[in-house]
Image 1: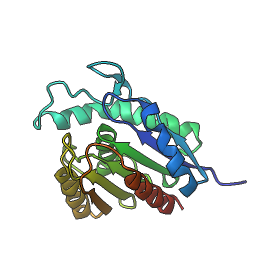
Image 2: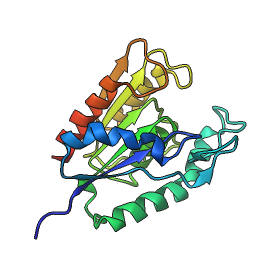
Image 3: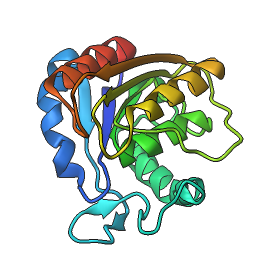
Length: 202
């Protein structure tokens, strides 16, 4: 019997939807030809127009952000669990990787930093680690952080800080700050993620 395919789950940012990240599969697939790619919609409707969100950013502050992330875990975990089960990989998280952008990155980093999801790898673009303590990652997940130095939405220093925190917890983290780039995924960043996920998923 052949081994189950690999799985990459793409997690979009606030106000977007799964279709927004789906074009990345064209860059990723050549590096991970055995992978399936799924780009789900977040569970909640966006507060300010069309699109979806993992948690509301209305009235969000440094003081209440971590509580909103914690409250979003149930919906996030249910979304991941359903996708992973549908692909026959429950109990095979070493064959699963997450790729997030912005709010999707925040949720992906929360998932591994808390030890809830010991996936093979996380590629997080333009994100931050804003999870409430305690943080107790299960070591083995590789993390790639990519951030534009000119990001006006989430400063690149948030990824630098996340790298330091996760490394301090014993995680394997690579950090790439891209000069002049704003709040987006560049072609170079996508290529970095393709190589990273291809190596992590074997």
